Length: 243
Length: 243
DNA sequence: CGACGTGTTGAAGGAGCTCAATCTAAGTGG
DNA sequence: CCACTTAGATTGAGCTCCTTCAACACGTCG
Image (spheres, each protein chain N blue to C red):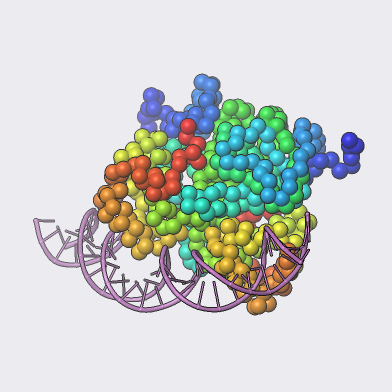
């Protein structure tokens, strides 16, 4: 297998961590040298299943994945979306037992990194460790915003908010822009992420289109008026801690 | 001011961290020696306000506090409850700027610990650092459960779930039991924590009483049948990571 | 082509909301 | 110790946003 030297596999992780905390060259090198094995998953497959005790955590190299939890009555809640560059499972690999599952939304490629290597690196290089700690704190910030979204906003606002978050995050990694992007989620998944039903999501999305805010095709969104959409979605990017 | 040697101020933090990760005696000592200043807040006062950039994080020594975020339309979402022993603000002190606020629910006493001391300790003593990292991960686990609660369970289930979580957590720190406890929240706060309205919370609570599951007085709950309440609340304590 | 996953639409019903009034307990000040 | 105040709990009536159920449309893929 050929090693492509100029674009190392672990580069997305370096880029992500640098968002939270500038890293020294030695720190970057250490992250790039993290031991890992590559792995692919088809859409729909589980990267982690509730109850698993995983000994490695995965860095998402390409594609989309999401976290989910199922409630007793059968409903499923989507808890977070993950895009290329995200370190997906500190949570489930550091804690002994996965309290939720992570599923591939599209075909994904991941790098599996042994838990011990992560921990060792975090404590031998405080710069890296702090960046990783920040990363888990920012995850928490997104959870809090989602909770607010689901608990205290009406359907239209919730969905607009989700579209805005996606736009901002995809833009940050160069996979889209505030003018539009590939939308990887189905309406059912949007429903499960916002605490709504598929039918209602559909009606709201059609409404946004009709009102000239967005223009959807099967798997993409064009956003005609970003500022207005942010307004409708009660969206402010602060909680993403991107800047 | 007399120093009480046999029950050090920082003891609750040691107890909490040991839940996640056994600490060596030297580690414990180091936590106990963390520099700090004591401070009291009256009920309703803010420990942290959205937008603040705090340079210290607080350990809750007594009383109750909660995190909250306000949505554009004016609704407030309560994001988490904190009880004695909780380290309340790694999130807001490590990240540059608070993305939500923390408010005292009752009169509280806190120990303010400088951010730098926390970080220095975390990286000089990996045992402690790992325990603190776990702590932020467990916070995340609670957020995920709450999101599921709000997004995918009906009102009765949500409220029963909240009562169960409280019972389990209070029991873990010896402030109550699964047979009952002092309930510090008003019905308005329960509403804001569960994404409901005060009126509806009231009706559901009365229902639980009428059905013989609970028996409330002004500020306490007696739980007649814990197992059944857990059932109604779709509650399983796994996500608390207490054992 | 047929079948399946996804999106779209209609009609009817209900869980939870809103508004507004009343009740209760626990202060608080005189 | 009592009148007064106030925060919180309780109740009723009407309404609405969202759900449920069920059918149909569309496009993609074997």
